[in-house]
Figure 1 (spheres, rainbow over the protein chains, first blue to last red):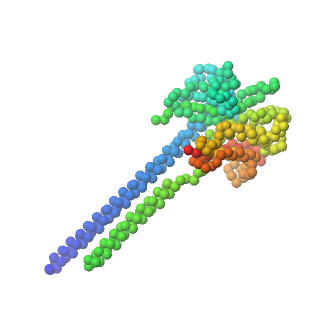
Figure 2 (cartoon, rainbow over the protein chains, first blue to last red):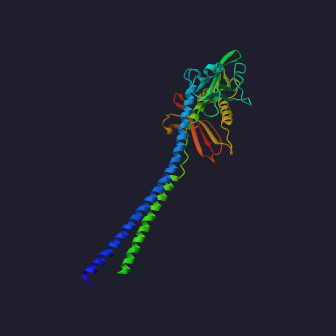
Figure 3 (cartoon, one colour):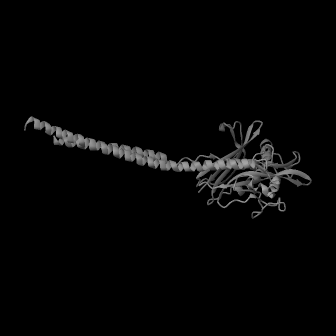
Length: 181
Length: 180
């Protein structure tokens, strides 16, 4: 065999080997890329779920702070330095005036006394039933709204043996707002 | 020559498989770390803190004429901490009234059960010199009330209400364990 043909044969073999090696590298790089893409998709799906939970918790905390702020508004609060305190004497008067139903831009507002609560069922407060009642519906909630609530003190002035004193119970203020789409 | 070429190819295949295995193992380790369940940590809850603030104002039926007036839970907490032998006018000890009042409230609002949402609660009242330094807590405290079991806990929330006193703070802390 002439030297030229031997050389061309060797070159052909080397070229085929080189092509084979390039193909091998391409397949490996493709495989690694696909693998990392799959791992990334899994990770994003999992961290997306955690993000949803965190978002829900933060929204709930924000709603609780909003509710507490509402409880501290001058129309309802006990006054002074007491926070999350609602004056139930003011509340029953406030409730009787329908003009206040749309005072705040919310879908519903209900305040309930939860302890002590000797009544088996919900009893609406008005000038006739107060203070032997447990529910103050300032604005009846809309069906599609979402409730957020916070604990408050419900305080009033009571009379015992000719002595006026501040009597406080534990209540809940429930604010209804539109559902997030 | 062929044998040498074959050996070389085999070496390359083995090398390729090793790289693939290393990548797969690294991916599995990474996923297992990401998917590891987080250790349950108490999250501070504004809701529980508001509950304690509202609860502190709850007016009990303990009347002390020397004050004068009906004592709320904050007053009873301060009395029980500074003078545990103090009594209401009807003869009941202030710490007993504090204990029974908080028990009544917690059993009504945070009732624990094995099948219900609330699995366990713990209320503690204790001294703390510096609110930012938990090591300044003085235990055992003024009052401790617990109910339920921690088995089946999925989320843990906590809240606290500190009362300022001469020597630091009287902290009322509540921890609640919720299940499914």
